[in-house]
Length: 313
Ligand code: GLY
Image (cartoon, rainbow, N blue to C red):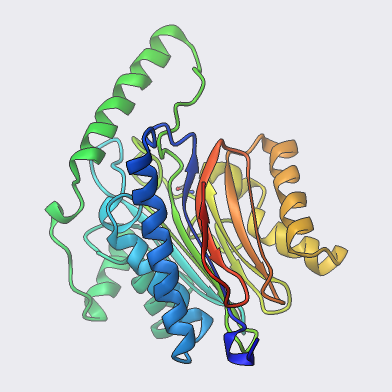
């Protein structure tokens, strides 16, 4: 393998029961999107782009595909509104940028990158983040860009289920149906630099103002050239409480674990401590790819050391 081919990229498109993936056609639709976006990431790498450029490109493309819960496919909150969270992190120097509770932005991951590079802060939220977007000349996307018929129907169902659950005081086994959806992209470039990006519309029927793990450094996203890049997808509150992405990095740093050992240790911790629901993708500093999840499925795929892409649930 030539040195320039030694790059790795991993993507995820959400975790859950994915009960909506009932037929082969839907499954193929998800997996083909992941496969094609992995190839875009490869192109960035082969043209000499950095891990950071690759994750921003891939995360933007995932945000542009309405089947995923991020960008234009974002789920709706209790008020029937979109409120998106996103973060990006550069493993070279731990620089990071994040936005939370933003709307009318087609690619929140690009706004997060601007927070990282064009402001002195790590996170901007809601109106402040929107003003910063205006300041940077970022175009606002119209309301109708976000309201896919699937998401409107999903909110209707969630509201209905909520009522049923209250009526029967029953937690019902989750029919998760992308409820824990998020998108994520992580990469290692041939220079050994790691980067991570995570973006989401959050959870269906969430409270207005609720922020999940995706924009929180160490929870939904983490990258450090000394250890690994991580992106998480799942029930954000579980990932925030366990600081799961940093925990996985710490397993490598302090216990000398490799990618698969640290991923498994992270998933065990998530389960033992909070019965966490969701999953993670991980690339270590050598470019080894690993994944783990506690839900029935997680849509994900990877290119390891420049190899052919692998995609799966
Ligand atoms: N992991 C996405 C969220 O909880 O918002």
